[in-house]
Length: 449
Ligand code: DQQ
Image 1 (tube, rainbow, N blue to C red):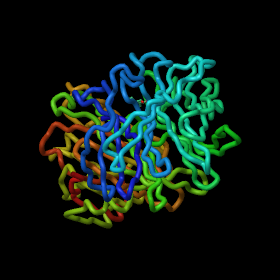
Image 2 (image 1 turned 120 degrees about the vertical axis):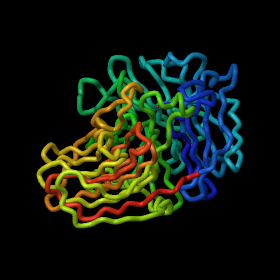
Image 3 (image 1 turned 180 degrees about the horizontal axis):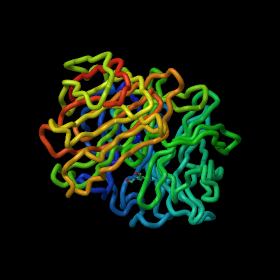
Image 4 (image 1 turned 180 degrees about the vertical axis):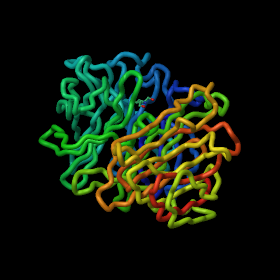
């Protein structure tokens, strides 16, 4: 699987579609897979929802898109690939209408319902996101202007079939480095939080990609950014983010957690969804992210340690590859944090660290695996993070075999993939040089299946 698609709560159940190649653990021949959950935690696989139609406007693939409630009719918008996928003009918006259980989908005879504007020299046109504001529907599409940068194009409609082009919502002109432009912006989402808006998109550059969150305001049909930052310091390990607003009014987000290295070939599968994240906007414009309360239902065996002054590495006694950890640390001047997937002799270990001297928080994968022949990135993934005076560090960590998701103080996340070689690389530790570990709670974590 790759991107989450069409996330929607429908008749109380959470539906998550996703980019899917039914033929193997590599990207290609993209269909829409489908899973459903009653409780946001446990998921059931459903039949493939969208398959490319030979001779149709999506014969080269059903790429990313969204789902909306059109007056009680479930409706998908997705990117159809006409023939080969390497020309901007081959990417078009298609529409499909669903049965009430969201299992069967009928492609609309009017497809494609939207094609790229001809007056821009675009290098892509994909990943529609559609929403309604009173009686008007809006659609944004991810794109890039050749030699300029990423761009989000804005449209409106009264019937979901005829779309009027309103121009670029925002252009990531390469001459303005504050715009994190890349060559194309993928999977845009515009989220309203009161009178503020957050624009999420994936920045695609050759060799790298990551998700950006811009907080700002709308001025007519333009988005004016005020703060820009990466959504996740794990870069490509949390990509193509998509959100829904559920019946309780919460804004929930998922991202695609992609692989590192070659483990997929032996495993026969590739890619996972992240855990859902609950979003809110702090008064200073910071996008806050925290794990939803429902995830506590996965907690099983529990241990707690408290009041430790960390000098070097402390084994915390717990072991496992499906764990939730919640730690409160009082850092001093040097790096401190938690270690997981640690081998008994410490040769393999993945560290979640905060370095107050450099104002960085991240995941140190340099010793995550002794397997050096599998194309793994054994690196440090980090981002800017600074505690305020008197603030403690709260690290909330979810480890699920090779997937590591870290939340720091509910405002900073790092998602990573780690593949230790040793069967006994299951230890948990804390480390520091005078920092205090006030408390750490460790639970073994149940399965979502
Ligand atoms: N993945 C999809 C595209 C999207 C990209 C194709 C982002 O629609 O732009 O599988 O990962």
